[in-house]
Length: 244
Image 1: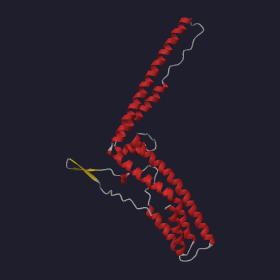
Image 2 (image 1 turned 30 degrees about the horizontal axis):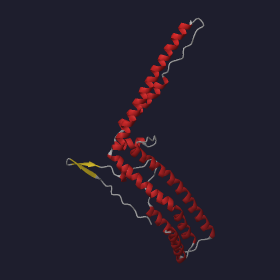
Image 3 (image 1 turned 90 degrees about the vertical axis):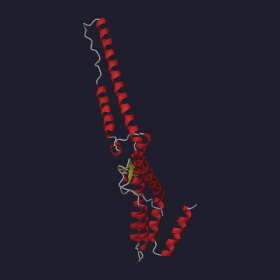
Image 4 (image 1 turned 180 degrees about the horizontal axis):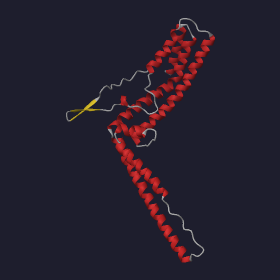
């Protein structure tokens, strides 16, 4: 059974010039898209309680229970893989400055960098506007002389260069705004709590992912076998295999 990791959270504070300042802790982190923390102790309790039935179950009941256990295994594996990906993406924002549209608002709110995120998004919007401002190609009339057409081409190329420079400047401003935002996020003290919370969740999730098959087998043994000694012997065999 995995040892539970206790996280003390209640009203964590730091002291700055004699004033109590609230500290954002890993226990307060909410990974967007993940319902909650992994309670392995509760899972083990449920599996152990399946062994408390006093009368043998019918074959149909055992088959139904095993189908439910197999479905649980499939669902929990799929869900854990999704959640590990979500936690990894959140961690990448605060450690590598990666931008993730589904999570960046949460990070900005926690790290108090919402104004910098808004500034970055405004620059992105400006890039879109500037990119649409392109000169029209010249249309020559039959009466235009070659000299007239040459002047129109030169004017068109000059306008194109002006538009290109505007795009370049807008993109540079957007990159600078992005770097300013990501730099502030990485440096924020709250990001350390997010990173630690993600690491803890990923570690527990991977552990349960590796153990999911064993948990399902243990549940099936407890459901399908009513004799306590036989159940214990089979559990011991599983433990022996796991320790190889």
